[in-house]
Length: 546
Image (cartoon, rainbow, N blue to C red; front, side, top):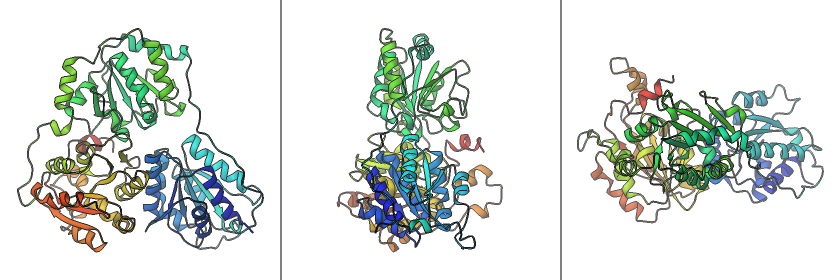
């Protein structure tokens, strides 16, 4: 006899979910084992919040729908921040949430789980009956895959135990087809490109599958290339790539973007982070935005030319329409030489911070770690004052080498992100840049990384503070609530079974070189005592949005 819980788990496996994460309790025990028995790998986290962001990061870096498995009530609420992050990022993810039965109104676990999911920005679905279980599961999966949504599929306990009805169909679900605008719809953008002398193409996460088409269009139309933070690495091999646009941008990249007379955003939200609150867009700059959803067009700022369409399809059609209008435009030899010489932050001269043997300049630290680590890596970033350093100083091989879970602006998601990313890209060395505050929020999942034998490099930029608040409010304020005694994070790491050492200057990084050369099978935590930077270069811009 097959139960509904077993049928739901087996059906999701048949539909093609890639990996499952969670914390197992009585309510999700059967469905989780059904997933595993059907061939879906499962990773047990130490906290539901960690499992949620692991699943989110896995989906972002693998391109597959992930599964998060949770106990009813408190299991779901514990995962709330991670689910909200995934929902804001439009991560295709199915959250299997056990739910108290309708008659269990006095259960300690009873709550409005659908209302909670909606408050987080996720889509709420439910298995309504044994007869509808297959259709309900298919609906949730289709919404996750085709609409790129985080879907909470509630599984009432009484229905989980019911006898399943019907056989699992041999049915696949294809992604949404490309949306191709008409020639008339594209003509305003074709004309704008023709008139432009300094075009910049800006790609976001929605353009990650359109690298070849956008790069070819940029070459043909003389446009420079840039990305939002979540798409870092997309145009690594292009001599006219400016890297990340927005608060993380180098001075040269910011200058060239702000001087553009046309900006075309492909699958990019054009939010305050990517545009520096609009300062990177000149008053006379023509702005075009390409997206697959009407609701995304002009959602964050006015745009002159909104185009509903898939990034790859639009870029390909534009290339055909602009093919006979080729000019150098922004792709001059002078611009190419300037980009080669100083588009990166590690090419930008900065004042040396810190005192040798006491604290290390976070930029010098990041530069040297970048030299030591292998090129095949996947970098994850936590949130905080430090975050610009690993984001800009750590190179990545391509757009699937950088995971940036920052849509909800929560600190503490970095370690979870790094684990999920590592599972998605097992051939690459996982690297995490985190602050002491965020790392200590998530430290229980270091045991998960040890258990999985991940060769994870954790760089803790440790200044014993929530330093974003320190620098925002200033030293003249009472900072007791956001500063802390120095913590021996390396010792804590060793207590979890990882390796760990302390860095006060770049001379202290010898253990990292040895570890990298040793074919490691466990995490290495670097407790870097960093110098006070007075507030990182992007921080003042960030707080203007608060």
